[in-house]
Amino acid sequence: MLNFNVPHVKNNTGEPVWKVLIFDRFGQDIISPLLSVKELRDMGITLHLLLHSDRDPIPDVPAVYFVMPTEENIDRMCQDLRNQLYESYYLNFISAISRSKLEDIANAALAASAVTQVAKVFDQYLNFITLEDDMFVLCNQNKELVSYRAINRPDITDTEMETIMDTIVDSLFCFFVTLGAVPIIRCSRGTAAEMVAVKLDKKLRENLRDARNSLFTGDTLGAGQFSFQRPLLVLVDRNIDLATPLHHTWTYQALVHDVLDFHLNRVNLEESSGVENSPAGARPKRKNKKSYDLTAVDKFWQKHKGSPFPEVAESVQQELESYRAQEDEVKRLKSIMGLEGEDEGAISMLSDNTAKLTSAVSSLPELLEKKRLIDLHTNVATAVLEHIKTRKLDVYFEYEEKIMSKTTLDKSLLDMISDPDAGTPEDKMRLFLIYYISAQQAPSEADLEQYKKALTEAGCNLTPLQYIKQWKAFAKMASAPTSYGNTATKPMGLLSRVMNTGSQFVMEGVKNLVLKQQNLPVTRVLDSLMEMKSNPETDDYRYFDPKMLRGSDSSVPRNKNPFQEAIVFVVGGGNYIEYQNLVDYIKGKQGKHVLYGCSELFNASQFIKQLSLLGQK
Image 1 (cartoon, rainbow, N blue to C red):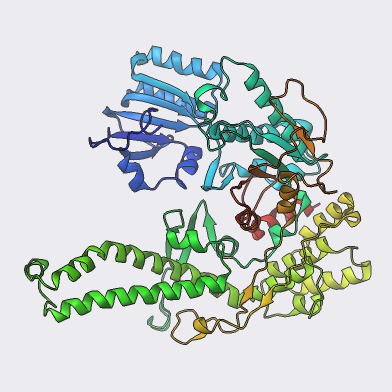
Image 2 (cartoon, rainbow, N blue to C red):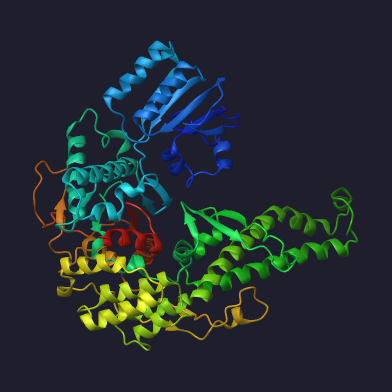
């Protein structure tokens, strides 16, 4: 698209064609996790601007638009045509544009006599946000429209529900057009996931039937990574597991999302400025906000985002030591040659030590990049560690794991709630909700009152409990409580290396918990369906194959072979804990791939807010 919708030629030495990129907020959210400003520049994008901002005319430059086909966007584009802002216009719509809106643009172009300048109009079918190679989320703008709360509101009307489902299906349809594959769909019955499945099946079917305009025929098909075998799409409803999104976590990426402001792969940190040097009575200095991108380019992040936190701290320390050693080597070489203050020109004249030095100097850019990543992760990990220590998150994590795996608890829940040093009111609420959700039978009224009293005293807001109570009664979860596998986390002896005073991370008192791989409910559902195992949880999941002529309401899969590729999509919101669990699960399966998608990505505190709104009378 950025290359005017012609394939990008790699070995092309010529300058790229310079152009402007115009996007709306939706387009911005789709592009920003994928391409940095530098990468955009390499593709010839000199300027990227929001559609609804004041833009000056640049008459001799082509413009690439990437926007949603909404009324106001179209009006603005027509205005651009009338004002003759650019040399030529490449219009790309994130989601398919309707016939009538296309006519509006055509009329405007005619009126502005700019028809020849509208070079191309494309439906891109890109209405989803890719956060990782194996993870996507539907939207970020207006995400409250498809949120867990929106889907589970008790007073929702049928038409509102239809609209939400259509929004989700539109994005999922875009996702499969992009993959170039028609999935086989499985979903749980009687849930929002089933409504999505029915609509998606219908939409894929209609598209396949219209052979002339089908998006799944000819050259696009098989171009995807799924050439010979179709992928499985498992649609799960958030309600099959409400404990995991509230769970405290122990792996790096999930922790960053839980305790810091981490959003579309960017983390925003407030740097605490030193207190000691300000005179008494002076105004406290403003905190500096720093933001870091945690992306696929960052090797350290790629390697450690799924590791337990103490391991991450140790790795940062190791990286730092190896960096210092390399830096010292460069300094040492310079001093041997008595070139402390000399310029590079004098250095290159000496021959014999130069080879070494040249390699040292040529590795400088690499060293600097390494240094940047070390600093970045030192800052991020330190910020996370602050939270772990002040809120005793390791204790919470371990305790919740025990509750979820039905192991004996070493400390009463009441003690945890009433301990003033452990955690924020929200941490306590999360812990109690997990206990309540996981309990085989709900606590007696008397016990519940006692817990409520303790929670209120700890400063908790009890509205989320109202909702979870109704939800539990409604779901009659007592008949089949979701089990979370039995995973006791084993605390290993605290990491001695990190404990050394030489480390920047003072990990004292933080438990070094090592994770055993156990499958969360979503992963278990996937496992049964992907491997074609019989399992009471999934045996009555509906089966849809949009390629079959007649839809059938069956649970019996026609295809008995295990799948190689699967997409798990959670209707009602997902989180990094589940994503990580799937990634770990699939590592053990040779040659299989799983992608994780969700209608929105929330952390526990955002989820609690939604539960709290649902619980308000």
